[in-house]
Image 1 (cartoon, rainbow, N blue to C red):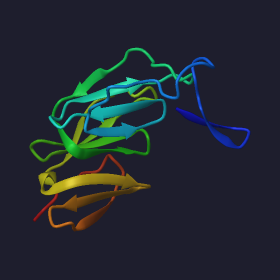
Image 2: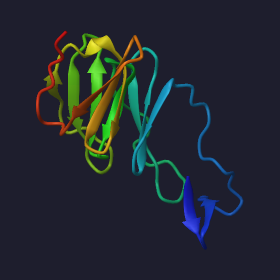
Image 3: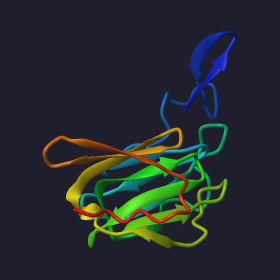
Length: 150
């Protein structure tokens, strides 16, 4: 965990003698950072949330199972308050999250998304890349429906 102090980027430590990290053994394939927490996704689709305190210690509860159906590299955080993910059947999901990273329900907002290998968000845009390396851009708001047609 890092912060800016006296115009310098420094490690936040639980105590002055603490190491410059506060975790090890993360072997998950994919990480989604957020404010105060992060998500990890294994290649199998198993997703966990991890909470961090402002003093570089883990929050509680730790390593909460969130879901087990989201494919590797097909999840993204949208505006820090909605997780967007594609399940193994190609459905696009909007998953509102609280400020502490807890899910507040699931909404299916699209189908046909299994044609994409990855998704990412930037501002109010959702970008998806297919197997040919072609990118697709969607104006996005996490509540409308996005049915992909061939």
